[in-house]
Image (cartoon, rainbow, N blue to C red; front, side, top):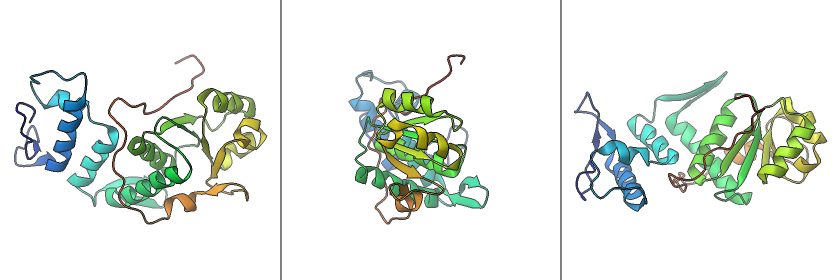
Length: 219
């Protein structure tokens, strides 16, 4: 679709040409991203390079367009289709604005694997907020360092990390979202996810930071 300046209707499935992978709207976003990139060549050879410049938020929209009713995530009794999950991701992305989170800011999560962690990940991909996850076994001293070093604005945690968060002075200086038993000064997950908002539109560019990881130095 990148051989000419015209926006093609669809990007075709490589082995099933009757099926479109990405709609015209998504294709237009891909081409707009490609044409604005300083890395673009004057005569791109195929779509592969164009797709490589696609931001993750737009790639999620492509998944929704393929099959909005397909099962997207399962976590115990939580089962969400792409359409249902997109509503929750959009709500969290909207809540980021209320929290003062902007593109380039750090959201620190101290969570085990659960659907809320994945939802926060995608909300960050839409907004340009940098997801900064740390292991839920983190100590208070380690958490102090990460909060200061990353300049995190908001911390999201659950009961597995409640003690470390409570004992971290730097964590107390951040807005805190508690998934399980929030204190009176903290924000509930329900307040983030149960709001009626317009569908989130990708704000992050393809070259924006996606995630920042801290390791022990052995990886």
